[in-house]
Image 1 (cartoon, rainbow, N blue to C red):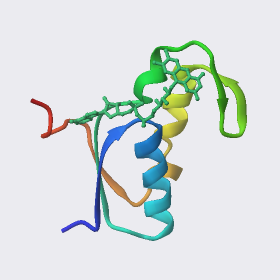
Image 2 (image 1 turned 30 degrees about the vertical axis):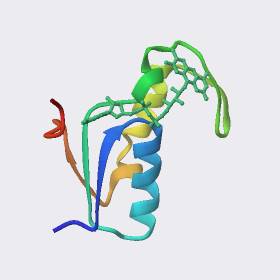
Image 3 (image 1 turned 180 degrees about the vertical axis):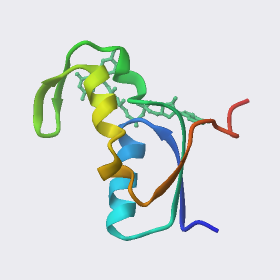
Length: 81
Ligand SMILES: Cc1cc2nc3c(=O)[nH]c(=O)nc-3n(C[C@H](O)[C@H](O)[C@H](O)COP(=O)(O)OP(=O)(O)OC[C@H]3O[C@@H](n4cnc5c(N)ncnc54)[C@H](O)[C@@H]3O)c2cc1C
């Protein structure tokens, strides 16, 4: 039984995971990939606190254990058609 289920490893999903961890919610995180739409970009501008970062580096940052420590992570989605 989970308090929260997050679907999708883009910025919104990773942000939700950070706040879920702060509130110590038991969280299931379902994502097939990390970084979301902008992972293909070489230069993401004005990401909060960062002037410029590549999509690959952003995806790596989103996936850090610090962000996900209270989450059980599943790498495939049962919600895809
Ligand atoms: C080429 C490009 C360049 C960009 N550059 C910038 C920039 O410089 N600065 C900026 O601020 N913004 C930029 N953006 C916009 C930014 O990428 C988006 O605003 C941001 O990614 C939205 O984050 P999100 O988490 O809401 O959604 P998304 O990034 O869309 O993430 C959603 C995630 O959920 C997953 N998902 C969806 N459905 C399911 C399912 N059923 N099961 C499992 N997983 C699922 C998707 O695969 C995806 O990984 C850019 C976008 C693109 C495409």
